Structure formats: C-alpha cells, structure tokens
Image (cartoon, rainbow, N blue to C red; front, side, top):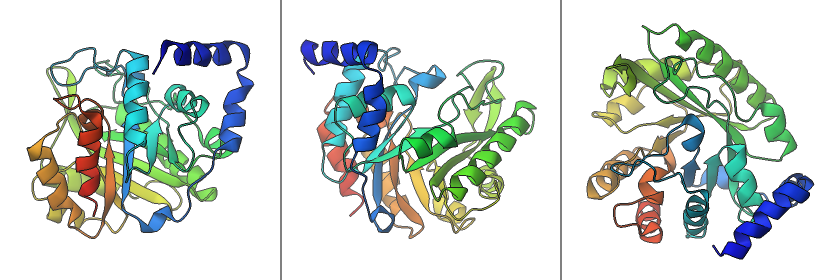
Length: 288
C-alpha cells in the first residue's frame, strides 16, 4: 500500500468515522457459501497481545504491513473471507476489500496472552448486536478449557450466551473449543486426542441451539477419531506453522467429510519465505 493510501485511511477515520457504517451497509454479501469448502483468513491475534510469528517477535506489529498482507490474501482465488476484530475489519471495509467476502467478527479477546487472567476470556470485541447491525456473517469465539483454572467457567457461560444470540439471528457461531493447561505459567494446548474430544463435547453443547454452530479445531494426532465426536461442520485452524508438514496435515484432515475448510492466519500471512500469495494459493488448492 502507498503512503497516500494510509494517509487517506487515517483522514477518514479522524474526520468521517461514519464512513465505516456506510461501507458495511454498502458491502456486497456473498451467497451460497454454505455448500462450499471455505478458506477464511484469520487476523485477530494482535487483539490478544500476540504479535509474534515463529522467530519474529514483532511480525504483526506493523499495521500497514499486516493490511497489505491481508489484501494480498483476500485477492487470491479460493479465499472466501476474513475473521478479525473491529479495528482490522473496519480498515478493510474502508479500503474496499470486503465485497463478496465473508466477514466473521472476533468476539472474545480479553484473555491476553500470558496474563494471569488469560482463561477468563472476556468478550471485549464484537457482540451479536453489532455483528447484526454491520451485516456480517457470523461471530467467532475462543473457548479454552482448563479444569484447573476457575476463569474457564465465565468463558463457557459467555460463549454459551453468544451462541444462543447468534443462532436467533441465523448467523454462524464459530466456536474454538481448546483443551489447555498451564505450563510454566502459560496456557498451552493439550494436543492429546482424548483431551480435544472432551473439549469438543463441551463446546458443541454450548447455547440454546447448535443449528448455526461451526467448530474451529486444531489438527492433532488421530484426527479421524477426534472428528467422530461431532456432526457439526468443522474448520481447521492453522497456528503459526507453515510448510510441507502443515499442508500435509491439513490435506489429510480435509479428506474427512465433516471438515468444511480452513481458518488460517499467521501461517499464511507470514510464511517463512514471505510469499503470501503462494502460501495462500497452496492452502486453497487443498480444498479441491
């Protein structure tokens, strides 16, 4: 992006903030996407205090660079949309990048990485009312489950409420149930199949209806057995890793009919060779 583009974006935000709502109203919404294998680009990591990618501790810190990478990713064939917080989505709206793209609002980002309250993951991002008013297509929530952390229960309650509210408006509730445990004070994914199966059982039962619930799941060992624990549509998350090992794992999991696509952020936006277009194209090709 040019310096003039960024200046214009900042001027709009400062002088004409009402243009955000207008851009949302004018956005062309996609249709018929429920029958397709989806590729959604995730960009909600900075809102949880996570800006590092692999050996680059400040990779996502430069917002202009992040937006350029997102524009490149969204321009590639086979990409259906974006999942992010309001600050990122509104930049993309003002830049005119979200026509015919799914928009999923990230709802709970209060569990700041490394904080003592990390598992009490408050809803500090989108709420259902705003998602409806902006004409977006759904909301995503992170639901980390640690039996040893009392913060888990408030997150479960809040996620259940959000699932119910989104279902009332017939909007996707993308829930990410993750089993975690504290290791050296940090919440770490428990990648054992039985742990993820248990978390799925909890996550898919949240709310007053599961009619519009989709699951966002990591790829772990014995993934076929894990996927037997649900009949809900599943989207695979990407994490930080990119390269042949990640692509192979995604491809194997995508062979399961319950898997409906990918939600990948850092692995494609910041690949080892920095070729965002090539990384996105390789991942999109896996969807067939």
